[in-house]
Image 1 (cartoon, rainbow, N blue to C red):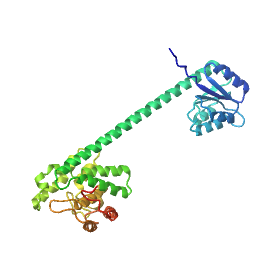
Image 2 (cartoon, helix red, strand yellow):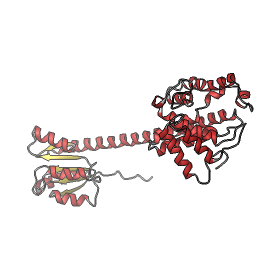
Image 3 (tube, rainbow, N blue to C red):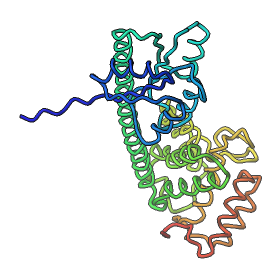
Image 4 (tube, rainbow, N blue to C red):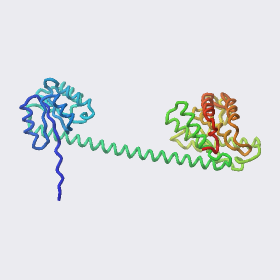
Length: 348
């Protein structure tokens, strides 16, 4: 049976006193892979090509004292994690505080007591190993949590899009409406300089802005003739119904805002609450522009897709009356860039 060799920890001692280096060699070389350096520069040179598990560092040395060497160790990513035990013959409280603040792990007094220095080294290595294992577990749990969050976000997006498909299925003439409005709204938000998180929120809100249509009879939604005043009033209720449905989503209250307020008008003549200007939530003002645009560029029971120049003219008329002028301007810019008129129903 082959037995794997036990790993010997590597220790570097830095001390300008030859007798101290000899004593440390005698105490440590039996149990550890021991190396000694007579100065700070020599130690730093050794460390440039060799890794160690622990450093014993004398404080009082010529050329570079222990604190100067420790500062170099802390600044280098390759050595900053190595535990350092400082060696001193005269340890006062001020020196100890300074050493701990500088990154020292522990202190050992001179002259060396073999049992004591061995125990300090053993304890330091055990604590460092525990710290390493704890960090590994934290990293593992963090990666697991991130993977679970990503999975949850995918599930949330898929459920939102499935609900949007369910909503659009009620209306024969607006297939894919919610998805297109979400795409347009997200692009408007992006061009407006909004954060990725803001854009995602707009996207989800737009996907569900028409969820209240679930509570409206399909016969009324798909009526080919002109709606009576009573029927139009009934259709308007989809904003209230949607707001009530999504009010139960406590983690994202903006969903309810979009459903209830996407038919408010910038001039205050919309429904259901007659909100105006900036009283209408900003994300909802973005969605309103996208919603109006898609309504004109989609087939309806009473007409086909409107010509692009007509759509542009209508959006110009709606600027500052029905729609927020700033976000309307962005949509107009998108139209001007869309030379082949790709932004319409039925186009890839």
